[in-house]
Length: 90
Image (cartoon, rainbow, N blue to C red; front, side, top):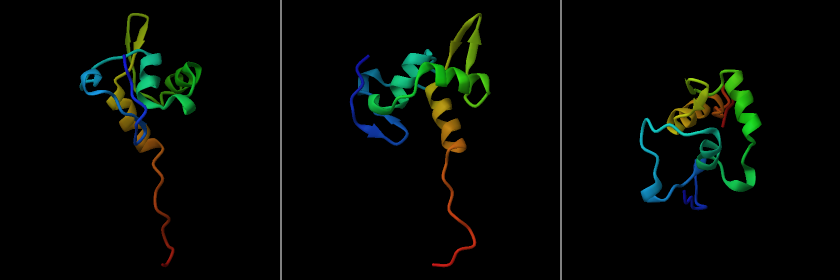
């Protein structure tokens, strides 16, 4: 899979022909490649810890684990969003 280096929000941009469609399931390594630039990509172990703590949505088929990249991105956007401070004056 060819992944270009353009950063698109939380994740990397994907070449048009390699774009993951809604509902497409991927393994842990592919998920990390799709969502993070190579220089700051977390480890598969970190992703498994997130999975174990139920901080990331996943599908278990038999003993295999799959992720839907758009669901993961949406969950992380909700969890790690930085909100505006309240009560302050401009």
